[in-house]
Amino acid sequence: MTDIKRRTPVAIDLSQKQPEKVSAVDQALEIAPRLPRAIAPINVVINPNQDFGEIELLGLEPDKSSKLWPLGTIFISAASGLATLWLSSSLYIWVETLIATKPQLGWIAAGLALLTAMALAGFLAREILAISRLSANQKLRQLLLVSKLENNLKTASDAVAGLVKIAESLPATAKGRAEFLATDREFLSASDLIVLAESDLVSPLDKIAIERVTSAAKRVSVVTAISPRAFVDIAYVLYENAKLIRAVAEIYGCRPGVFGFFRLARETLAHLAVTGVVAMGDSIVQQIVGHGVAARVSAKLGEGVLNGLMTARIGFSAMDVTRPAPFSETNRPKISQVLSVLNPVTTKQST
Image (tube, rainbow, N blue to C red; front, side):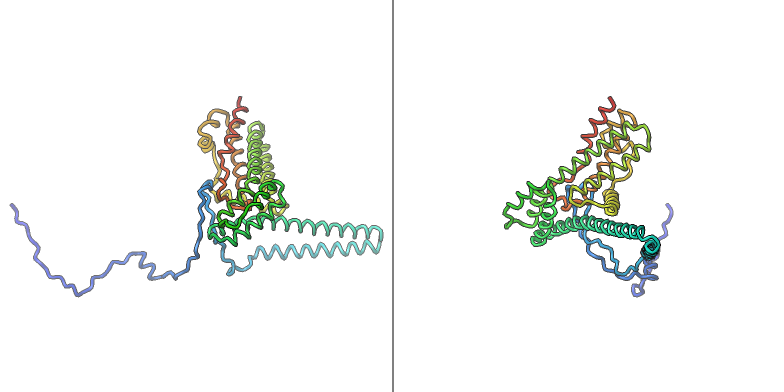
């Protein structure tokens, strides 16, 4: 056996402080420490009836107080004002010269210019009114959501009064509005009041909107399936989606104008992106329809199903953007409701 050398005991001086190992992260923080910052509170409201994992965020308004006017906005505003001033002065000089040389033609030109100015003023007023109606519906929806979250009966009553005012201009809500006004609402809580108002005033509009979305999805699916050219598919899908967005807005009492439509379309597509809807391929379509339609029929019919489903999603997003009340007890419409209609259409076309 070999002898094992044992280490001689050594005394350790505990009075001396051992150096601590400093990580690279700690060294970086010591070099450039981060200043403390306050985090604004975020209220997240998750509705179990929401589709595609949609989450409504409240209180996420960006801080615009420290931002200066962007140069692009200043340039466009100044250039537009300059062009308007040049056009107005040129038109005035031309009409004045025409009146001096040919009085009859000059006064006709002056009348036409005045008529054009009045028509332009009316067009701008209509656009402003349309945008204000859309903004009013969105603000009312947020107010109802906050009042239900905070269980504030006074705020809920004011918001429901605005909802009744919107419903007065919509014939489809006549029966529900009469029942709601006849109900004794004295002992209702904020949540019960909002649920009752949604059931009587908004649910009839939801049925009409869902029928409109389903019909549009069916038309898009059939036209895509029988269309011989791709550009015809694209043109018809764009036309049908634009018409659907406008129709859904009209159902909820906020008919958009020209500029209002572009704003509504932008918000609808933004809402569609936030809810997690991405471009879907044929494999995703097969998953949606249970490996049925796209696997059994031609690729053209599978493309029709895809376009119909995307049209339905755009219609449902338009409902979320224009609906004057949040989805509380009423279930949000889902793709399965449209898919049950598209399946017989594609099967009939395949036979």
